[in-house]
Amino acid sequence: MCDVSDRFFSAVRTLSGDGPIKQRLVAAWQEHLDNLPGTQVPHSIRAKFDSLREAIYAVGPANGESAVHASVRKMSPVDANRYATSILLMLAELVRVKGSGERIAFVKQGRPVVTTDAAVTGVIQLRNTAG
Image (tube, rainbow, N blue to C red; front, side, top):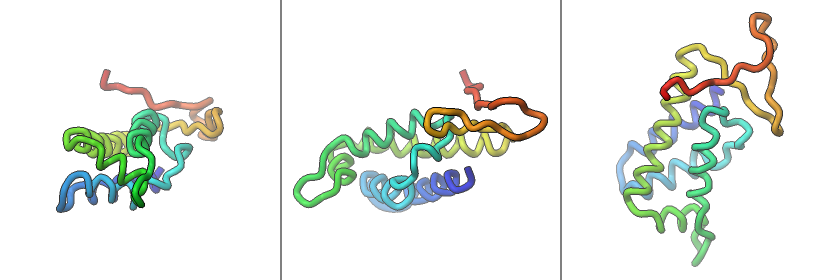
């Protein structure tokens, strides 16, 4: 969990830097999130992360550029900003969970990982309390 939070924090730092939003989005993804296995992403943000990954790889590589560069180049500035904001919101969710002391259930190969905490039986999954 800590590594995942650290990666999202670093991505947000990259997104908050100088330069055009598309360049910052490419850098944040490639430097911090691209090699993050989906199985390490908490269930509470996995759908959003998978959606982001899908958008980042929506366009195949062409003319010597990577799929990430091609996909982000084809995005409108509004879409690029929306995806950058989604990274920030995923970090906020990770921080909220970490700060509240809630447990997060991770799913490994389609099966929940069961906690060994004596006070807890079974898997406690984070629930969306916002709505």
